[in-house]
Image (cartoon, rainbow, N blue to C red; front, side, top):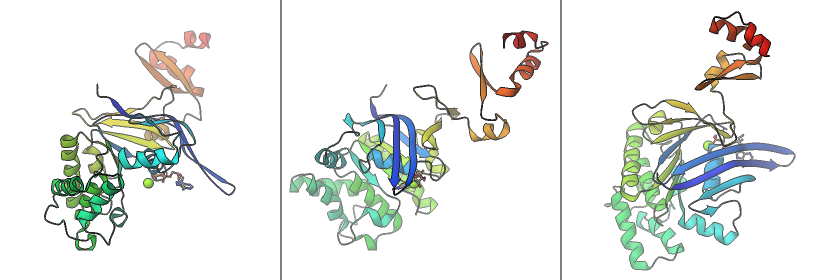
Length: 299
Ligand SMILES: Nc1ncnc2c1ncn2[C@@H]1O[C@H](COP(=O)(O)OP(=O)(O)O)[C@@H](O)[C@H]1O
Ligand SMILES: [Mg+2]
């Protein structure tokens, strides 16, 4: 079993502004083993970017635990936060323009994080050149971003994000502004970087193709993890049960069954049935082909 790189438990994020409170994450549990490629999916407003910003050290959790590469993100001094952002995470944003400094060449863009992190000059140039070659831009070192296509800019962004050899790469809709062919290219690049560098990657996406290209997709709903699909041959969706036993009933089931806000949990040997609380007695009896008396007597 691979080591766990990211672990959050009961993570809460509350945004407060004036008299308004938004609970963006409400007790989120997540474990990401080292080397995994994980997709975060889910409806808009579910808390995906909030989670990514916390993992990226850009935002503070309000409560709960969150550790990345052994760093506790709930208690960071300014200095520790700076080092965390420099060394532990690389970030790629959806807006291609946010990823690269427009006045600098690609080579300088990739060398800048290394300069800030104190890499010696010789190593900076060598590593930047190597990274740009790795992302297929070896012949564009002296180009400024404006001379590159959208796909090239995102590949350049990847090289910048990886400059300081972070163990964790975070990408928020990295292919959102790319056409599908270019997006597919970016994905296979991510995959080969993962294989080559052992990089752990978390990608927020609402593109099913992107999600399927990852090892696992975790859906976030209302600030919690709700379901996941492991993209092996079976690729079956499962519901996530957190450390204290909470789960989110998938939306289609919620729409199909009128629970009325309550369920009866019936332990049935090796599985559990969830019944709308008000119909459990008669319906459970019917299914079992009994008169229902034994069930009713028990309740
Ligand atoms: N800086 C902020 N201030 C106040 N509310 C925010 C802020 N950022 C996000 N939110 C709110 O938190 C919730 C989750 O947002 P977000 O993480 O951006 O969702 P997603 O990325 O899944 O679309 C939303 O209700 C959003 O409006
Ligand atoms: Mg978002």
